[in-house]
Length: 129
Image (cartoon, rainbow, N blue to C red; front, side, top):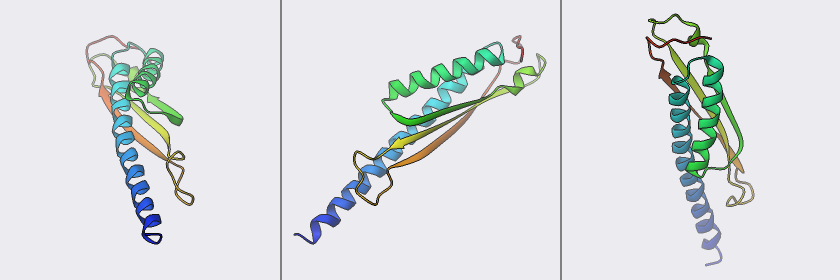
Protein backbone atom coordinates (compact mmCIF):
# COMPACT_ATOMS: atom_id res chain seq x y z
CA UNK A 1 0.00 0.00 0.00
CA UNK A 2 2.89 2.37 0.79
CA UNK A 3 4.26 1.90 -2.73
CA UNK A 4 0.92 2.26 -4.54
CA UNK A 5 -0.54 5.21 -2.57
CA UNK A 6 1.76 7.94 -3.99
CA UNK A 7 1.10 6.77 -7.55
CA UNK A 8 -2.66 6.74 -6.99
CA UNK A 9 -2.54 10.22 -5.46
CA UNK A 10 -0.45 11.51 -8.39
CA UNK A 11 -2.93 10.06 -10.90
CA UNK A 12 -5.85 11.54 -8.96
CA UNK A 13 -4.22 15.00 -8.88
CA UNK A 14 -3.39 14.78 -12.60
CA UNK A 15 -7.02 13.99 -13.38
CA UNK A 16 -8.14 16.95 -11.24
CA UNK A 17 -5.75 19.30 -13.06
CA UNK A 18 -6.92 17.99 -16.43
CA UNK A 19 -10.56 18.46 -15.42
CA UNK A 20 -9.94 21.99 -14.17
CA UNK A 21 -8.15 22.81 -17.44
CA UNK A 22 -11.04 21.52 -19.56
CA UNK A 23 -13.63 23.44 -17.56
CA UNK A 24 -11.50 26.61 -17.55
CA UNK A 25 -10.97 26.33 -21.31
CA UNK A 26 -14.73 26.14 -21.87
CA UNK A 27 -15.19 29.16 -19.62
CA UNK A 28 -12.54 31.17 -21.48
CA UNK A 29 -14.23 30.36 -24.79
CA UNK A 30 -17.56 31.58 -23.37
CA UNK A 31 -15.85 34.75 -22.15
CA UNK A 32 -14.37 35.46 -25.60
CA UNK A 33 -17.73 34.82 -27.28
CA UNK A 34 -19.63 37.11 -24.90
CA UNK A 35 -17.02 39.86 -25.12
CA UNK A 36 -16.93 39.80 -28.94
CA UNK A 37 -20.70 39.74 -29.23
CA UNK A 38 -21.04 42.63 -26.81
CA UNK A 39 -18.34 44.61 -28.64
CA UNK A 40 -20.11 44.08 -31.96
CA UNK A 41 -23.15 45.96 -30.65
CA UNK A 42 -21.17 49.16 -29.98
CA UNK A 43 -21.13 52.08 -32.41
CA UNK A 44 -17.43 52.92 -32.18
CA UNK A 45 -14.11 51.29 -31.39
CA UNK A 46 -13.62 52.87 -27.97
CA UNK A 47 -17.08 51.89 -26.76
CA UNK A 48 -16.57 48.39 -28.19
CA UNK A 49 -13.30 47.94 -26.33
CA UNK A 50 -14.78 49.13 -23.05
CA UNK A 51 -17.89 46.98 -23.46
CA UNK A 52 -15.82 43.90 -24.35
CA UNK A 53 -13.61 44.24 -21.27
CA UNK A 54 -16.63 44.74 -19.01
CA UNK A 55 -18.44 41.75 -20.55
CA UNK A 56 -15.34 39.57 -20.21
CA UNK A 57 -14.98 40.35 -16.50
CA UNK A 58 -18.72 39.85 -15.90
CA UNK A 59 -18.71 36.50 -17.69
CA UNK A 60 -15.60 35.38 -15.80
CA UNK A 61 -17.35 36.17 -12.55
CA UNK A 62 -20.50 34.34 -13.67
CA UNK A 63 -18.43 31.30 -14.70
CA UNK A 64 -16.73 31.29 -11.29
CA UNK A 65 -13.28 31.24 -12.86
CA UNK A 66 -10.46 32.95 -10.98
CA UNK A 67 -7.52 33.92 -13.17
CA UNK A 68 -4.16 34.91 -11.73
CA UNK A 69 -3.81 37.19 -14.75
CA UNK A 70 -6.45 38.13 -17.29
CA UNK A 71 -5.78 39.89 -20.58
CA UNK A 72 -8.50 41.00 -22.98
CA UNK A 73 -7.37 42.21 -26.41
CA UNK A 74 -9.97 43.79 -28.68
CA UNK A 75 -9.31 44.39 -32.39
CA UNK A 76 -11.59 47.24 -33.42
CA UNK A 77 -9.75 48.23 -36.60
CA UNK A 78 -12.68 47.31 -38.83
CA UNK A 79 -14.95 49.87 -37.18
CA UNK A 80 -13.28 52.31 -39.60
CA UNK A 81 -14.79 50.54 -42.62
CA UNK A 82 -17.61 52.41 -44.36
CA UNK A 83 -21.22 51.46 -43.70
CA UNK A 84 -22.33 48.78 -46.14
CA UNK A 85 -19.03 46.91 -46.11
CA UNK A 86 -18.69 43.75 -44.05
CA UNK A 87 -16.69 44.26 -40.85
CA UNK A 88 -15.90 42.32 -37.69
CA UNK A 89 -14.58 42.79 -34.19
CA UNK A 90 -12.23 40.21 -32.70
CA UNK A 91 -11.64 39.58 -29.00
CA UNK A 92 -8.82 37.46 -27.58
CA UNK A 93 -8.90 36.48 -23.92
CA UNK A 94 -5.93 35.02 -22.02
CA UNK A 95 -6.18 33.68 -18.50
CA UNK A 96 -3.57 32.15 -16.21
CA UNK A 97 -5.39 29.34 -14.40
CA UNK A 98 -3.95 28.48 -11.00
CA UNK A 99 -3.41 24.86 -9.89
CA UNK A 100 -1.28 25.54 -6.81
CA UNK A 101 -4.09 24.50 -4.48
CA UNK A 102 -4.14 20.94 -5.90
CA UNK A 103 -0.76 20.43 -7.59
CA UNK A 104 1.90 18.24 -6.06
CA UNK A 105 5.54 19.36 -5.88
CA UNK A 106 7.08 19.15 -9.33
CA UNK A 107 3.76 19.63 -11.12
CA UNK A 108 2.92 22.83 -12.97
CA UNK A 109 1.34 25.49 -10.75
CA UNK A 110 -0.56 27.21 -13.54
CA UNK A 111 -1.25 27.25 -17.26
CA UNK A 112 -2.22 29.97 -19.69
CA UNK A 113 -5.42 29.43 -21.63
CA UNK A 114 -6.45 31.55 -24.59
CA UNK A 115 -9.57 31.88 -26.74
CA UNK A 116 -10.41 34.14 -29.67
CA UNK A 117 -13.80 34.93 -31.12
CA UNK A 118 -14.78 37.14 -34.05
CA UNK A 119 -18.23 38.68 -34.28
CA UNK A 120 -19.64 40.50 -37.32
CA UNK A 121 -20.66 44.14 -37.19
CA UNK A 122 -24.02 45.16 -38.60
CA UNK A 123 -23.34 46.23 -42.21
CA UNK A 124 -25.87 49.05 -42.23
CA UNK A 125 -25.43 50.49 -38.77
CA UNK A 126 -23.43 53.69 -38.43
CA UNK A 127 -20.04 53.26 -36.88
CA UNK A 128 -16.84 55.16 -36.39
CA UNK A 129 -13.30 54.25 -35.48
